[in-house]
Image (cartoon, rainbow, N blue to C red; front, side, top):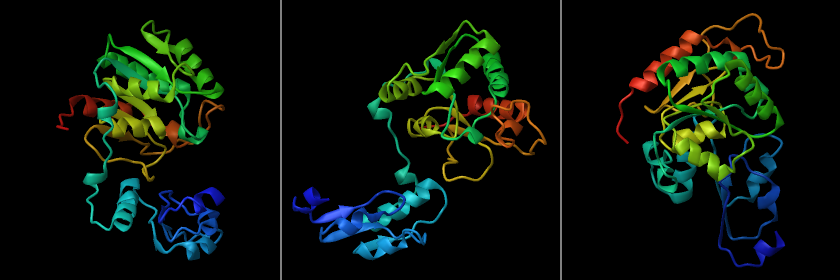
Length: 256
């Protein structure tokens, strides 16, 4: 904070989705950021010279509020949909499956995901399937998938790629499958055909775009088979619901 205060900046802009005490330690003349109404951090609002309120809704709508306030323009949500294709070589040569998320309640049993992969294999018979992710839990998950399916044309890349390399894999894919995660959002930003598995229809990151299909359960089961992945909601997605999304994304025709 001392260094920033001595470097002569005229404006500080906080583009986080929350405020924090950082702004209270800055003496930069103009300080712009979110006015947080949470009582625990509301005290920090007084340190901003200009602030705005974010509604808890779809993430692009939140970014529009930020952009309008910070840049003093009126953007459309379509203007703000990211497009990262210029950063990576875009191809159509594999199926990429992300096997993890930030919470176990967002991830279905590997037994259920294996059933979804079998449906993918029915349509994309000869395509290489690449499992991506990181960490011990996702490594074990990928091994379980490989053990169940015994698919000779499947490659386990969990913990074998950098962030840049795994983005490249998504950019080169013909189809992406994943849970509510960073790689699902990468698929969205790279404009690649993909299916997102969500535990319900609420959430800031449920994107509405022709290249993305969202699958969530219509009914919740009373019990689950896998105690390692006990999330009732995400495990309630049926094979039929997945098949419908898979057919829809395969047949989807859209222009960039």
